Image (cartoon, rainbow, N blue to C red):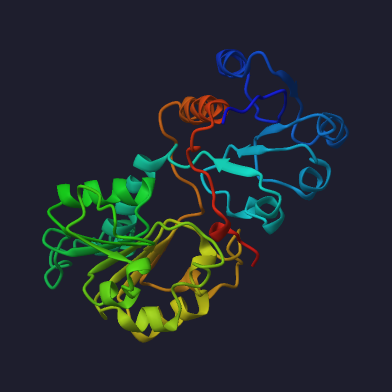
Length: 329
């Protein structure tokens, strides 16, 4: 069944060629381009808008006043904060721009892994102190031949798997289902098929979290998960902070349940100054910040324009969230 787009609320900060391309894709719809902080303008636009293309997450104003909305696109990689129960209850299609930065997020993953294995903290300290530590790695091994387990085989997880194979690693994957196994994954575990996460964790030298945050995945990595891991294992979180029970992570690092961790996301951001994670010698922290892809805005625009075509044709949308993706924590 085809859908007609009549009026669009757009708060994406596009201009120049990007805006022209978006206009072209939306024709002949009426486009109301409003600044994201213009509450009055947004309120006026929502009186008619049946589609919204937002520069950020949903807010309560759009939920309350967007009575005619049928499709909302949030131009962000992760849109768990927009996955409100009301959206699914009202049958509104909700999509995001996941995949716009997959390759560089995978690079960032390996920056964290290599920083831990090659002892970035110690190397930096020794360089500052002019110390030549020629035997620093005598008891350590590189990532070649190790087993990596990737939790979540979406855009980022799949890119991590590709790079892991290039490093000569055995790649395990865990996701909702193992019906589809990405080319670079040697073995797949699926929750829907009854596979338990701990089955994979006990096999891994490195565990990478790249799964979507939802009520299902909230605190997926708790004390039991860390206890299932090898004491020599490394833990990397490139997904969302609330997937990890941070006190459990702190305990695991302090007591040697795992060897080290590298995280780009945290339960509270900015990470509070009194968080014990800051001072752990086996912890690498980056502040939820990754170098951009070349022309990331063009990547986002490509996803949006493809979904405009799909929406009008009544086809499944790219990056559409399902009711099971709801996040209420």
